[in-house]
Length: 389
Image (cartoon, rainbow, N blue to C red):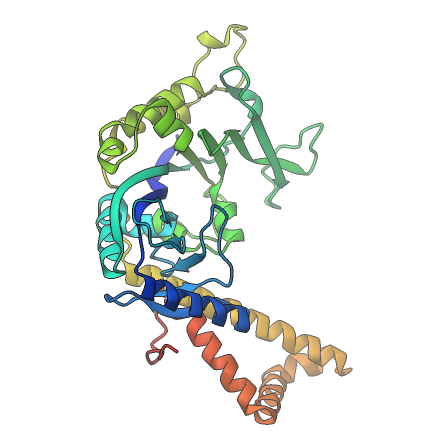
């Protein structure tokens, strides 16, 4: 009944003992100042191996002076402004999209390669968080936070979203126009499980690559997709299981997830036995219990970096055109044009406005073009290479 569409690692946080060379930190400080001046991340290159990155205008909590992003299929790197390589000065966050394309093992290899290209002096490392995600095609699934059985003291937090206007949602007495969109159990600092409507989330956040991963049409509302994420934080990995290194994770993280889904259970609905220990698991939970045994097997989607990049490019174009049309209509209304005049002459109206504005201030237009090219540096748009300042 519930078909597995995708499974794989979804988030990875790693801390490194080490430091950047002083000249590299100076370059990052200059890029950070440029980012403040232009009110957007500044494009720069890091280290002798020339790692392109966007440097944020602010640092991050924990004493990290520099926040550097190497693109949608890269990583977010945090660096402290310190030369002491015995300290934990480096932290990296790899999100779902990067892991989706590369998988765990290739991602791990790339991390050490990137550190070398940046010129980092690196010692020990520690995995601070690793999430495992499973997406299910779940027609008719009704998420109910009351069906979770958890250890004493663990919080269960539901989130209610609006129902989709497709007429199939049942109307409850309390939440007449609402539906449980997600349920979160526990804390991400230790262990946490979250179940949520991934189809809705992907549409809201314009993450259309997930639909290509699943092989379903974003417009098909009958294809309900729910995600189950198992999140193991530092408190769970290191303090409870003494897992720290990549080798530790590869040997034992399956046991962490297995214990998690045994101690936090989701029950099948409409059971009458008052003893929850005898009640049957929901079919989704049964599948999850089977899947966590083999979490270290990379689950490749068949999507290449180029395919995901092309989806990102298409999304940028579509969103920008939508905004352009909306603002053109807004100007037409403000100028007192009729609905018919706006509909018939919108392209000419937009072209005239852009031509007039561009001609009036070519310096400003040139600056905006440069900023747009820097901002979209990691999206495959076929533009000439950007010359770094």
